[in-house]
Amino acid sequence: MKLNFNVNIHTGSHDEQLACIVRKYVRRCNYHPDIEKLRELLSKVTDEQKLNILQQTKNEGRTPLLVAAYRDDAEMITTILSSLQSSNRCKLVMMKDNVKRTPLHEAASKGQTELVTAILNSLRADQQMQLLAVEDMDCRIALEMASGETEDVLIRYSMNAIRENKKGKICLALALCLCVNKDNQRTYEVS
Image (cartoon, rainbow, N blue to C red):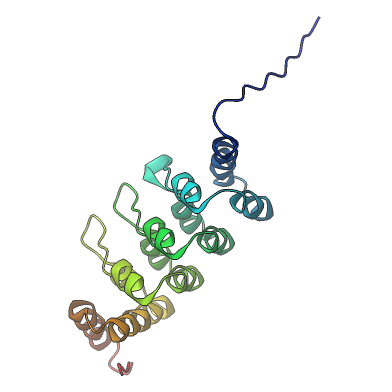
């Protein structure tokens, strides 16, 4: 004889229970994402709960956003970032894995221009500048890991962020140095 028991233990508030469900689903999305379901669940929790859920790490210290960058999943990145307010978006994008890489490092190193653009477009200019200056454990910024079109995108964002913030001479010097050393025919304007 087989007995089936369905026991629902209701501990905590409705918000806590909902956050628990979303947390479990986000973990599952690392393996088999259903973007529509993820959007629906993220819309039901507060921004602080989303941030708390999305900051949790798994293998190699990766958050769901880092996993999405690792898997070149632009739709997952856009879904996660668009669900958060600007300040929390910045906190999530700045999180590093065990080798101190951000989602931007991961996308840049793989030449994923679409991911780089999605990540940087989700931030304000001052937040972009902050992210562009983050170093991994080998003291490399994302720009140093990029090549081709992705490198061009990162240089443009660096220069725009500098123009917006009127600071960041180190990033500008690095960007200009890379332009001259890599290809004398490339020109970039800072206005």
